[in-house]
Each structure stands twice: as structure tokens, then as C-alpha cells.
Amino acid sequence: MKDKNLTKRKLIDAVGEIINSKGFRAVRTSSVARIAGVDRKLVYRYFGNLNNLTEAYIIENDYWMLFSDQLKKLLNEAKTEESGMIISGILQELFKFFLQEKEMQNLILMELNGGNRMMQSIHNARESLGQDFLEITDPHFINSTVNFRAVAALLVGGIYYIILHTRSNGNKFADINVKSGDGANAILETIAQVVDWAFKAAGTP
Image 1 (cartoon, helix red, strand yellow):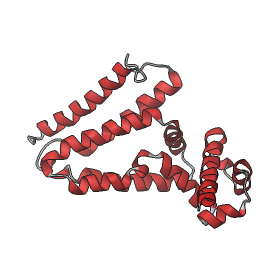
Image 2: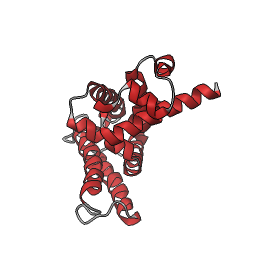
Image 3: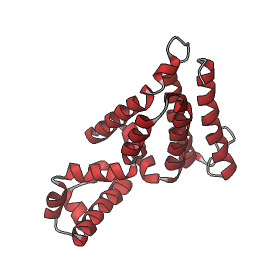
Image 4: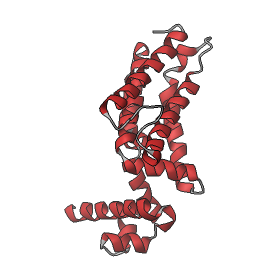
């Protein structure tokens, strides 16, 4: 069992190395096996096929996929009055995770570039989880002028863009350096403020 787990780890790491250096199109069974230093047959033995192996890598490095079970449990157990606080916490954790995890940054960039069925599939799975995530907020915004789904879209999109822009073009965006403690804290506090404003604008706690 120990050898099996070690081999699976090597294969998943090899996929990550290829994706981060050459992109999805360079992921081939032979190249993965070569980098992992194992027989290519083990890809099929332990994962069934190359797509399943690649998906295993993605799940390990995507915030929504990695914590999907915990997020679903949290949402299922949430009391109605806790919704705003829970949503703020989830978005704040997304910011912290995405800021630190270059692998997920690369995955989002590849998704934006398009043309990959697996990334589209992962996006759809993320959207499905997002539906669960937003359904607990819907009751708060019935008969209000606040579209919280649009608010969430702006927050998630903003998190991705600020971090990717900082990574590519320098340390500051809107004069905020998210790589600094003060800058990161400013974003985290503002996420909570925006969610709170939305709930208050809808007349809910």
C-alpha cells in the first residue's frame, strides 16, 4: 500500500510539473511516466486513464474542488442568520488560498485560455458547487433590489484578477500590495464589508 501511494504521488506530481512548465497539451502518458520514473502501465492501474490522473491533480490544487465536501457540510449545517458570515469566510479563505497557491493560479489561467474539455468540466463542477453555495443566500434577497449572485461574481472575479494581475504586472493593484500583510488584510476586511453591505441593503441581518 505504501508503494502504491508513493507511486500515485509521483504520478500526480509529474502531471503538475508538466502542466506548470508546458501546459495541458503536453500531458502525455509517456511523459508523465518518464518524469515520475515509473512504468506507464501504472497510470492505468492506479487511475484508469490519463484524464482521471490529470483530474486528481486538479482536485488537489483547486480551492473549490479540494474543499468541496467541507464546504457542502458547512452550508448544509448553516443557520439562516449565519449565511452572511459563512459566505464572507468562504470568500476570504478563497483569497488566502489563491494568493498562495500558484498551481491554482495556473489552472485559472488555463481555464481562461479555453480549448480544454477537462478545464470546462472542472469549471462546470465549480459552478455546481457555487449554486449550492449561493442557494443559502437566496432567501435573504427575495423582494429586494440586491442581486447577491452578481455581488458574489464580482467578488470571486475580483479576487482572481487582483492576484493574477499582481503576479504578472507587479506588486500593486489600485495602490494595494496584496503580497503584503496590510494589503492582504485590507482585501479580507473589504470582502466582509461588501457582503455585509449587501445583506443590510436587502434589509436582512
